[in-house]
Amino acid sequence: MLLLIAALSPVVIRGHMQRVGTDDDAELRIRALFGLIHYHWQLPIVKFKLTKVEFKEEKTTANAGGEDSDTSMQHINSHTIMKSIENWKLLLKQTQDMMGWVRKTLSHVRLTEWKWKTTVGVDDAMWTAMLTGLIWSVKTTTIGVLSQFIRLTAEPNITVDPMYQRPYFATEGQFTAEVTFGYAIFAAIRLIFKMRKAQNGVPGGFVGLQRILLRN
Image (cartoon, rainbow, N blue to C red; front, side, top):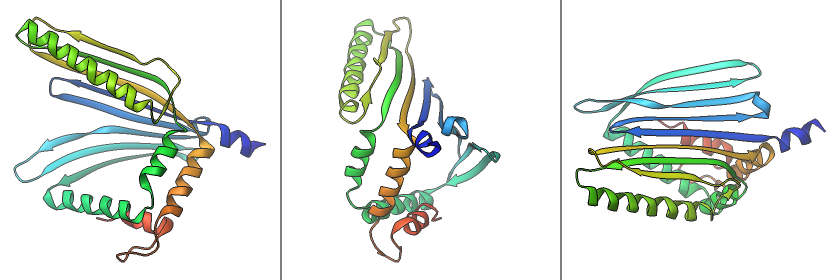
């Protein structure tokens, strides 16, 4: 009975993103097993230098055993970017029918909240009105595409407000999605079994997935 309750319990994913001018802020929270498992990710603080980019990333993971916080400073340059691209190419190559897995998994996700507000303006009133209409079109198209993959159980709350007084841009989005804990585990197991057998020196299954994602 306890296993059934755990399997049917929701994994709640909450995301928030905001951009005002050139300032960005975003965070992601994942809660599972009635709060026994909790994960929090904050948008990295980015610093641009002459030959590289540094970003500070904060992650918090909480479970029944306590809370673990991780703050890391990473250096991003051309070498690390190319290495990341190679790792993701290898992951896609090692995984059979990746898009099929993504579509199947997303079909079990329910979007219970979606708010998206944008305020935009330029010097000219006519161009502001045209830009407002364009953003409306982008948002409605996004809803149409997203509804083909995810079940929308709540009416999307989207707004686009024109700012005629001065050049301005701000956008803020918030969503809440749910998937059952049992299916989340099942989807992870399916992904592991879809990993091909040993190829390019990387074994298949969980060991291969772990080696690809942990490569430096």
